[in-house]
Length: 417
Ligand SMILES: Cc1cc2nc3c(=O)[nH]c(=O)nc-3n(C[C@H](O)[C@H](O)[C@H](O)COP(=O)(O)OP(=O)(O)OC[C@H]3O[C@@H](n4cnc5c(N)ncnc54)[C@H](O)[C@@H]3O)c2cc1C
Image (cartoon, rainbow, N blue to C red; front, side, top):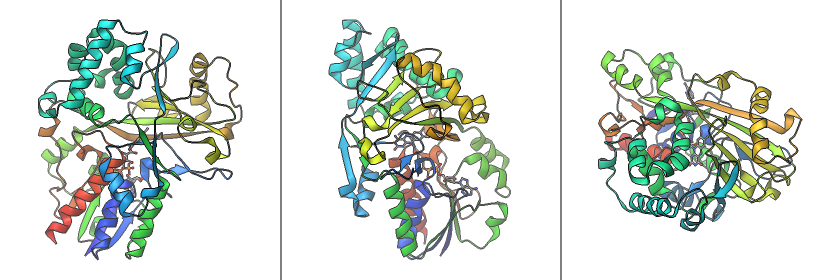
């Protein structure tokens, strides 16, 4: 069977791998000149390992990703360690990644610490996300963590991830998924996520599949005789080119919203977060970014020519000016705030030492009762399937769920043929 897949991100590559292994003729269309989509990476000459455009790690609970790695013979490349997570609030950095660090935190009173620990424990043990999806994260968190812990810990994060207005809409089921699946240990591949992407590309080729780079799937490609088409890219682009979709269906898909992401990657000579924090959540109002992530406080700098690698960025509404600004402009915008975190630090002046990565489609906004509007794989167009980040629920989108989505959509098709 001739199958077209739109997008060589992890969803498209996993589906392509599964379907080509069963003898189908798979053609993957990728509009960029690289594979991996949001999990794609770049590499400087002196580095042994490439680096993802956006901060990436996985959890010990990421079963589908780990199973796929094992199946592809990459299990020995997987490793876990326990890098430090901290929050920046009231102009100082405090660790916030273990029950002990919460207990020691100067930001909360003893009663608030107890309440925080109990609410987190509840979210870790409960499986009843169907109950939680009825309420917004902000309502639930205020009620069960208490107003003060909510304002200090969660409100800045929700707002900086989804923006002022959308943060209030996000479902508690989405938030539960984040807490439930988060592990203390974080994982990474020797050689970065690129080794998984390269391995999938190799397998697809071995199975006589093809990946067409710099090749956008356009309206005319719907008529090129493919017996099945799987779309893994942004839904608005699908709606623009898909032939004759019922108005009611278009309306439903149009209601699915996303926020974009902007990441500045700084290549530094020295360590920026001197306390070895890998992930620094910015819980301070007025900052233009939500996270500062020092990759080389997680992964050894020797893999990157002893450079120190720092991501600075976050999520922004799709009409945010950052999506139109140059990397120099964004760098200048971020710099005064980076100096608040480490005033003594000498920043690079050369533009070649920083790069900007942005995407308008980075994180779905999951409203309450999303299970009732969750789109299905099938569409009103016979033999055209959708498998996008909007199809992941109640878990937060991520590489593990991209792999699961690729597996599931391939299975849905294999069932029928
Ligand atoms: C800032 C940030 C941090 C993240 N951190 C993590 C993390 O720590 N851990 C984790 O597991 N996940 C993380 N993720 C999420 C993870 O990267 C994604 O969930 C996953 O990569 C999505 O894969 P996908 O294939 O579904 O979509 P995408 O990666 O978006 O792939 C879609 C592909 O389709 C292509 N495409 C679109 N339209 C067309 C067209 N018309 N023709 C041809 N090609 C087209 C695109 O170019 C793209 O390559 C992060 C994402 C971001 C943005």
